[in-house]
Structure formats: C-alpha cells, structure tokens
Length: 222
Ligand code: AMP
Image (tube, rainbow, N blue to C red; front, side, top):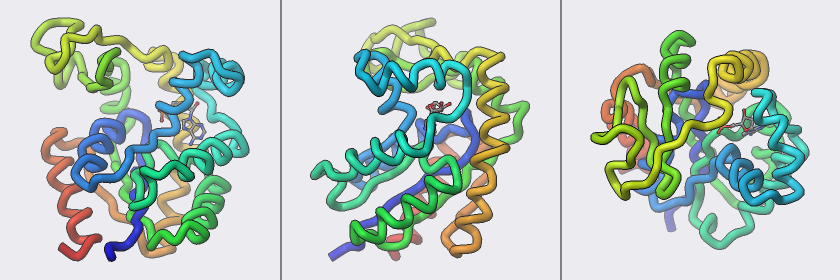
C-alpha cells in the first residue's frame, strides 16, 4: 500500500502556495488543507471561531497556535484525509511544526514532503495586491500577471472576482513581517530533518507546477 503522505507547502504569503496546492492536491488525489481558507470560511459563516480570528487575520498577525492546532486536528479526522493531505499555510510557527510532527506520527503518516516556495519581497507585494479570487469556485487570478479574460469575472464559471480583505498594502507588510519573524525559521527546522526541498517560485505558475510535479514524483518513487 502507498505511504500515507503529508505534503507541506512553506513560503511567504504570495508565493503561490494556494494556486499550486490546488493543482498538486488534485494530481495526488489528497485534500488541500488551507488553514487560511478554513478560517476565512469560519469568518464568512460568523461562527464562534470566525468571530475570534476575523480581527486577527485583518491585522496581518498570526492566529494563536492553540486555535490553529485544534482546527487542524479536527480536520484530519475527516475520512478524506485517510490517504494523506496537502497543507497550505500550515505550519507557520515552530510550535505548530512540532505539534504537527506528533500528529503525523500518531496518524501513521510517512515523513512529510516539505517544499519551500521562495520569492523576493518586492515580487510578493505585486502578487498580493494584484490577487483576485473567484467568489464561486476559488480560482485565483492576478490583475498584473495572470488576469482573467474579462475584468472582474472568472474565466471558468463567470463568478465575481474579489480581493481578500488582507491583501491591501498595509496589511500585506504586516503579513510579510510575521512571515519573516515566525515562519521563515521553519525552513531550517525541516532542513535539519532532511525533508526540505527548495524551489524558485518566482518562475511562471506553470513552471512552478512542473517543478512541484517532479518533486512529488520523486517523493513517491515514480
Ligand atoms: P493565508 O490565507 O494562509 O495567507 O492566511 C491568512 C491569515 O490567516 C494569516 O495572515 C493569519 O492571520 C491566519 N492564518 C492562516 N494560517 C495560519 C496558521 N497556520 N497559523 C496562524 N495563523 C494563520
């Protein structure tokens, strides 16, 4: 039987984790677990969790490790995670990475495949402030680099394209600061475990996908 595998996409906000994660999760047949998406959904639904995390997300700071770990543990109990999963935007702090190691161990996962998608800060700013997401299917566009055929409308399903509330210039600089302070050290954590793959994510979306496909195939011994 194939190993139950966790894929982890590290990298700063705007590196293209969400876009690539959707593609690679589909290719591997595992669920795409984005902690940011889960919390945005909670905010949109107005749940108790949403009420707590909404203002924190809007400030560009990170949500507490305790809340995030609880949410991820619950999600991993769903049957669709039985063959593995792909984490996007998680873990984001050292305690989250250590907590995840324990969960993966208990859950019978093999060693995770960790990819660090690296992009310089000046590129990230343009990517984040230009990002638009389809309000129906979640397809991601960039008004500068990958615009839709018709302004504000999704090519796939005609859905309205919206800008994330935390993709404004002020909040983006907070998010990048949080990344450098709290998340960037995780590359070292996984490098020491010998599971880190580094990838230049300033290339085009399709080039990055091809590089990721090669990483996944290598990891699965294909
Ligand atoms: P993202 O969609 O991954 O860019 O996340 C958007 C926001 O959600 C972040 O700026 C944080 O406020 C929060 N968030 C998402 N994932 C995490 C996480 N693993 N730990 C803490 N906060 C998170």
